[in-house]
Length: 168
Image (cartoon, rainbow, N blue to C red; front, side, top):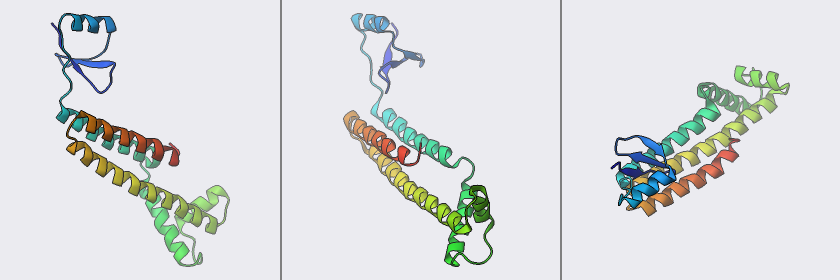
């Protein structure tokens, strides 16, 4: 008799050969009728999966927002900060000038826009990091499946709040 192991998705089970399968209700009911008992995924494995999911979700957010341009954005922020500190005088830094030209705006506007976007991102980055680290640790320390489900719900709630704030 084939045995099944429950997964996080109630419509997916893992067979004893390791294959993930979409549940076919009549097959699953026949399994139960024959005395089969599905075995839950061990708590340690569930914890590992949630920790990995949290990291993957954060990586997805960073990829969606920054792509491979983090160094470019960091340089623009640094140059805009220096230009503002100089009272918006002197030679306009290249990153500021590029944004000013692209948007057909003044260097002052471009500087303020770059720094506003950077501040929004830095605030979100701190919130993402704090929640990622706290909830990964909470997942690792969950004493049972119910506690782990609470952590999972907290992470889902955080994502539901932060993603729209970032335009995702």
